[in-house]
Length: 504
Image 1: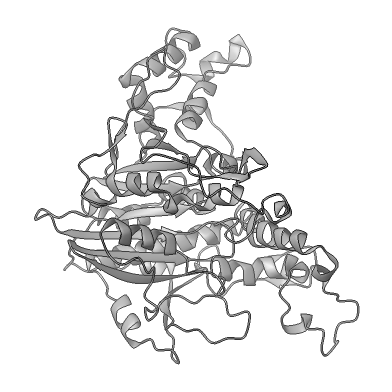
Image 2 (image 1 turned 180 degrees about the vertical axis):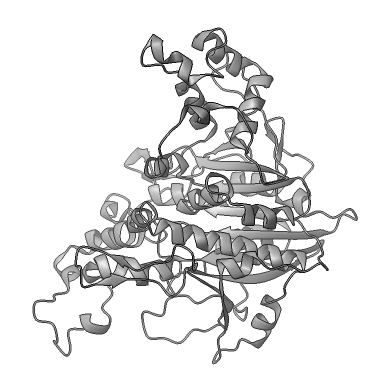
């Protein structure tokens, strides 16, 4: 996730005494659904429901079989000097179900973290490496015509099983940052980061004039530049261009790999995880097409939930909704139940939408549901109120609805069609705000439901700057917050966290 390691180094002098944390209750500030009306006089309204991980994973006999796919966002998630990606979620699950809070088992096989210091890994390496798709794959050119860019892989998926008193939790992780940094970001901006490798080594001096620019900067500035720009914003820049197709391919391949494992259509993780040792990696390479076409009539069933962070939220949204194809829809239909619940932590969906604009046709305004999938997709968007890099989604989609009633001239009103012509735009907007029918029509046309969960957990940046939230904690601290942890695990009913939840 963006700012995984350092974002506020420039404020070190002022934040030497950082507040321990904002006093916050266990209940979020707001839970609100796009499909439910709001009283015209209300400034805000608590409404809406979502299942939560605990209810999704409960079997009929009350035991737990919870399957989660976790997808990261911007930042150096595979940094070998930091805790493994997903540690916050693992600790939250362990705490909720009364298991010792240790994060990942040190002996558990996992996808590789970066080995930038030359140290061998202290854990077995295993996972499914996802290859670039054959369709749409190409070499890319940058500002120098003699230097092509390409990637051997687009991500890695691994599997960890956590045994709890009431059953088990299976956590699948998609990690993709090293694949894209090594292939695309490093050739562009890697010459100006703090890591010196290969031809960048000063000894022997093979490249005259190839300086270590980082050493000329103040240490705080250099750290912010690395962790916010080179290992952060550069990921978003990649996603906004043609490489974004490959990043979405990683998500599609991961969803298919997990669906195959959940339904019993394939069992590649078990032998991989069993055969990995400290000296021998166990990795199998599969393309998105290979993973998504797997079929086996002897399938079992178990539910799936998806948790995505930061930029990963936009990637998941695009794969499941914006760019969903028939192949992925078929794979999603293999999963049991009428619902797929997706938890978005610190999403950037509205921001990245600027890069995903496309030509518009008057036919696009028809309120017709997208075809291809037989279950409801429910996006539950968690936003810390002071997170600079998160957007609430209920007002976003309301805003887009209202903007559909914007008419440049009276003569163009007809081309905008339903929903804004019946009674005029003003009446359409009033009807949308206050009635369930218009909202449900809109949700059906979108093809997904949206729930916002507004939280507060970030402390002030320092005792001297109490009007400013700590941006690192506000963006990366979601699963460390009891508000968010309880809401994710327990779900909500009528705008309140489910009080009957059995988790701690």
